[in-house]
Length: 156
Image 1 (cartoon, rainbow, N blue to C red):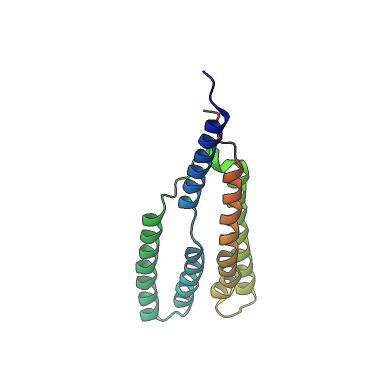
Image 2 (cartoon, rainbow, N blue to C red):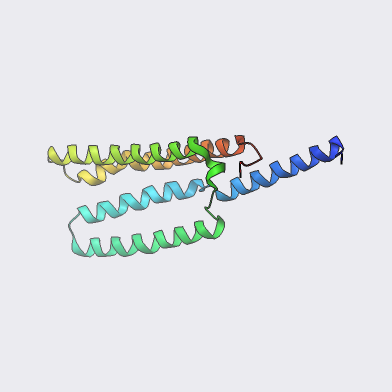
C-alpha cells in the first residue's frame, strides 16, 4: 500500500506538533526558578537570624508557599518526560546544572563560615539563587532543543 507523499508529510507535521506540545507542557516555567531561589534565600536568612519566632514564621511561610508553587506547577504540567525523549544529553545537562549549583553553594558557604563571615549560608546562596533564576530558564530552553531534536521514531 503506497501512501501519497502529501499524506506522509501531513502525518509527520502532526507528529511534530504533538511532540512539541508534549515538550512544552512538561517544561518547568521561568517563574518557578525565580520563586524557588527567592524562597530558599528567605528561608535560609530566617534560619541564620537565630531568632526563634522568625525561624518559625519563615519555616511555615516557606512550607506553605513551596506547596502552593508545586501545586501550581504540577497542575499546569505533567513533569513526566520519557527518558528516550530527554536522552543522555538532557540527563547530563540536568545533573551538571544541579551538581554545579550545589558545589558553588556548599563550597562558598563552607569558605565563608571558615572565615567567620556573618550569614554564610544566605551569602553562599546568593549565586545559587542567581543560577536558578537565570540558569533554570536556560536549562529548560536547552532541554526543549534537545527533546525536539530527537528522532520521531522510538527504538521501542
